[in-house]
Length: 238
Image (cartoon, rainbow, N blue to C red; front, side, top):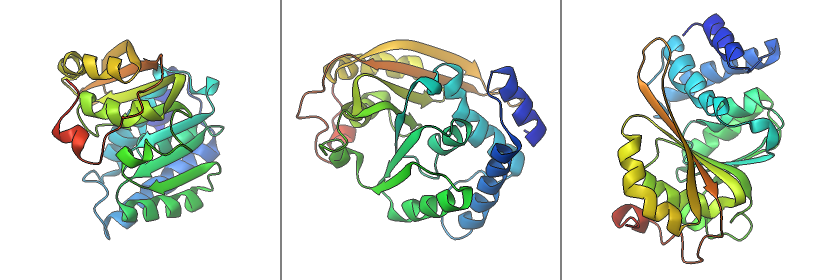
């Protein structure tokens, strides 16, 4: 995806980018590639692929959820900043918190935020399981996002405890979302969530399948969740 296509296709979806915002994506790309030589951040490094599979793909969440009506977003296991940093560039009023278990990725994100001159962003080195039990963060976020981190039954236990009642958990998946939803229904309900919408579509150009699951937080998550680090993955709620 060329930069011009990136801008045009987003404009078709109602996302308008200024020249300053486009410059931020360009800086993001160069910083990502530069740091990727020192640490493993992404296997995708060709410019057109980064714009399509990382930047555009991240922003597709905004096609189905209005980020302008929310103020706080927590991104669980964001890695090199996806989807939250591309979303933050497009919707600069958002307050972003990223939690990641690998400290060197946090170091990269802190550097990236300075390069992009982002404000209202914070990066926290922690496991999602312990972070979700932290009273300062538990059930405080309007939106919680996760992109291709784990199966939905596991992901719900990491993300719904952070979502405030009335807030939204957005799970961004590749293929097989319907099977994951069927397997994760009990976990989602147990954790206080309800599946509101499933949006399936194809990424432009390469036409690979993408799914965005919109989950509404209807009631508080029981205090015992999330369980200790590693437990949700080993024994998902079923």
